[in-house]
Amino acid sequence: MSSLQSMGNLLCCVQVDQSTVAIKEQFGKYQDVLEPGCHCLPWFLGFQLAGYLSLRLQQLDVRCETKTKDNVFVNVVASIQYRALADKANDAFYKLSNTKGQIQAYVFDGRHLSFIRASVPKLNLDDVFEQKNEIARAVEDELEKAMSAYGYEIVQTLIVDIEPDEHVKRAMNEINAAARMRAAANEKAEAEKILQIKRAEGEAESKYLSGLGIARQRQAIVDGLRDSVLGFSVNVPGTSAKDVMDMVLLTQYFDTMKEIGASSKSSTVFLPHGPGAVRDVASQIRDGLLQASADH
Image (cartoon, rainbow, N blue to C red; front, side, top):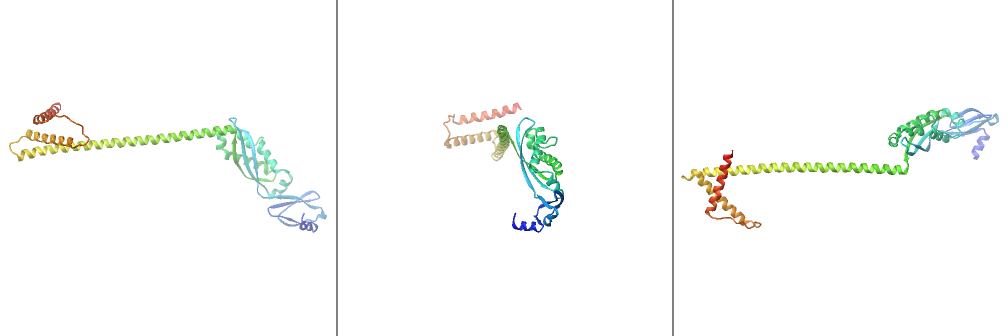
């Protein structure tokens, strides 16, 4: 005890610090709760301080081992914040000698209350993780009911950790890893499927456009041949369409021979060459056109 306090006691004065209350007794009987500040306490009249009670927020971490509905042992770590109520300071001071021990007993045992050991065994392991906030609220509500009778307020209760058995934890990690790999494989397959579909659509569009180009090319060739035949027949009297077609075929024949000879990658080609060969080619083309017309 400091000299200042000794002097205060000698002068029948006591000091109560901030966030603290003091319990005043007279001849061992409760009299009053002293608020923070300076108070006169005449000891010669039997008045004395029974003790001090802190009103500060306090925290208690509780570790509880229990078993889930699917028979998995887990360690549930709860963080409980509590404080004494100023208007019930006499209950908090006289009714409990070990506040932390009392809270731990309620959290551990539960008995008829919905505390950890009454809540977790009703749930499967996965549900415990998903409903830990509901478990915390249940613990907080029941603790509030129990501790309010002793002059304490439960400010907040949090389930800060749920630790299953090491083998179960390893199995859960493997399950999660397998699920993520399966999801990744599905995503990869979907991406490849989309690429194949887009590639097929591109090829189809390319072939369609190529077909249009070939059709237009052939149409242009036919139109050009027709115009050439008509123009030649008009400008050169006495020629028939057959004569013009033979000349066009002869020109095409020599152009083909020229391209074959000019190509550096062409192989040796043996073809009958001469006026008779050109006549035979023209006859074969005309016969083919006539046969196609007959079939239609």
